[in-house]
Length: 540
Image (cartoon, rainbow, N blue to C red):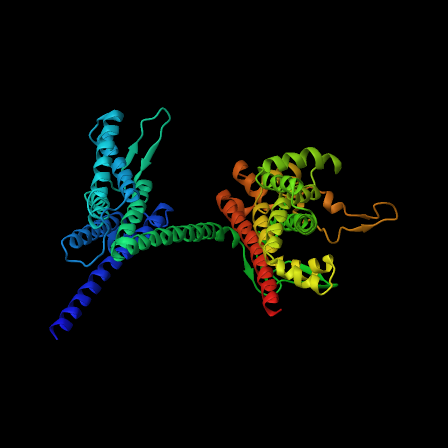
């Protein structure tokens, strides 16, 4: 009975210590999120959170986090916490502790104590060396927690005492004026402290040893993944918040308030009017819009895809299924990789020098389509080849065993299996070309705004003639606008026309929001297409 009681107590005590370590990991995650929000100015250092200014809350949480990490290590060394530490924290942990302490020691000595650059370097080497030794020599539970836990404690006390507060500025004293402000330093320092202390807390939660190191690595990976996702959402949210007022300027809802449209001979009025996305630019417009740029962007991407995808997939089929692996295919592979890495301005210059003179020596939608098509082509070839190579050879062998020809095997077996990969490559390529500015500037853009606000009518522009080339489309040979170029021109020229662009910043952010929506729409279409083909493969 006594043994059973003792085991139960030990189990309860271990659970409690695990909960403390888990709470420390949670605090590091909270600090990580708060620092990212502050870094992107979603919250300010003086905003109250739970009744406390942000900088005070950050300082308090850092002290709690660092103290908990240090206490866990000391408790493990004294036998109060049941762990399985190694004899040393290792070189990686030692360098991880030495680097921030080198920065802290050098910064304090050179700036706070006024010892200059040489004194700061000596002090940094001294403090960094001490941190390295304090991490490498003791047992892992002390070495992984005390030097690293002391860092957030010191940082938290600096914040709490007001040594670094909302009005703090560090003038670097360079020839060109430059300085670090608290709005940048506080969240950045908090971010790194959260990473280091969270890693140490995760090692403690895992009981040190091999399990603890794995837990620490997982925590760093998760926090980095969280930062990527958070950056994406903050970026999108920032553009949405800034752009929504401009997009909604002049919006009306009701019968007959929208512009008239004709479909299959029937004319009707839209029940909603959003001038920013339904209007062009005209002197008599109450509200100006970007409809010509939206339509131009749409046709630009569609034309590039129609040009690049058949050529790219065809080249990938030849290289993968017909050509022998050798010097030729290696040269093509190197060339496609190099083309995909080529800066977009080079493609723009190619289009300006080679395509524009061949289309009446003037900028045109067709020149822009082909230029972006050449940009997209290498990625289509690369991803299509990889997708076809990934198709198991057993599929080809089974088809050949049934007496099916090579082309029928490619068409009925290889291509359907590779389609999700091909679509993925097209999605990535469209995401790049839809936001390009330099090629559009050199080959297609006719001005910041299209005169009269007219949209290019590619479908209705086709004309059939009795002489070669028998089909003509003057619309493709017109210069038009696109959202990336229009946004660039608005930023550089500060254009303002009409009531809704009296505030140029609002018009720019609204244009950026529409561009973001258009690009994400292409992504959504591509992802839906990929999902459809994957379902078809599963059903088969």
